[in-house]
Image (cartoon, rainbow, N blue to C red):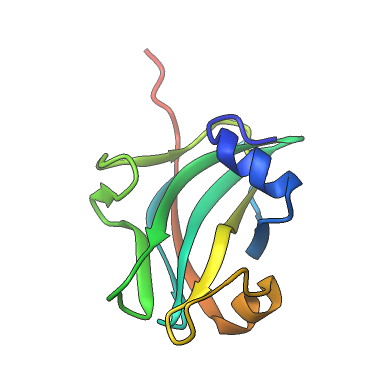
Length: 143
């Protein structure tokens, strides 16, 4: 159950979502921020959203996401140092007590080459070429 993306909850129930990468384990006793997140996917895959999610127990929280449209590079950045392209914030925090992060894709898959809707998630996963994830551990300052 995603706490801040209701559409993902609906589309997951309809079979229109898939985990692209992960889950990657985190130490829930530590605090993390995301310095960089990018992934590589074939340029002909479009009309889907891809996002980084953190989860704790049965709940997920969307940290960042982008819609893949036309005329984009093979490497797509969700977060670069100093900017989260979803929230336009300079710091991308992972919520406290999170124990994993995961890269998720959702939507109606289209291939630019064929303009074919509802391509399979298998084709999408075969077009996926990995992600870069740079996390920063930090300690909260007490007053």
